[in-house]
Length: 183
Image (cartoon, rainbow, N blue to C red; front, side):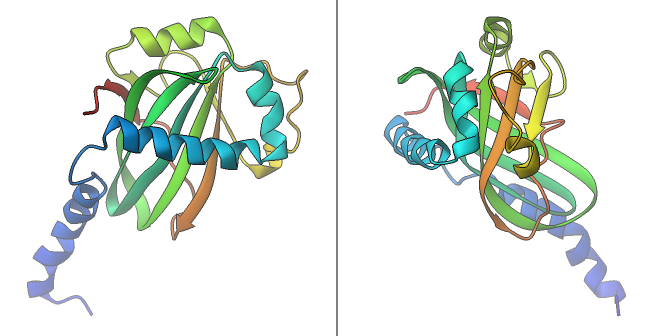
């Protein structure tokens, strides 16, 4: 039963959860690089990701995105844009969501930029909000099974990996990707 004195604590919970999604400090380049390399090993082990790796112009990897909330939620993660094996820049992903949600999770996200135009849009933007600019197709496990070199026609594909927690999925729409300069 909800009591009147517990209402302020309940109303403050979303802000506390959303704030906890942001790290206490930004990761260093070395930390991001190490986490990205570990994530790439995991991603390359996913047989259905092979066509994406072969055709992508670049891959933006967020090894660890923390998402949590209760009605109001937030997510945050840091990663690197790789062209071949070279880091082209460091980025963070952040967003807020509202609605029927409750829980917390950690997941990785890899975004495969299939065209030079899509890649230029990311690199030229002062913060790229997913849902504007190049279209992003999120591939769940079922769709990943059907990916072949001939079916890859969209500018950007996104794959989540390593999900742990109680939320159903990593929300992409409304999130913003911004270039950062880690220490």
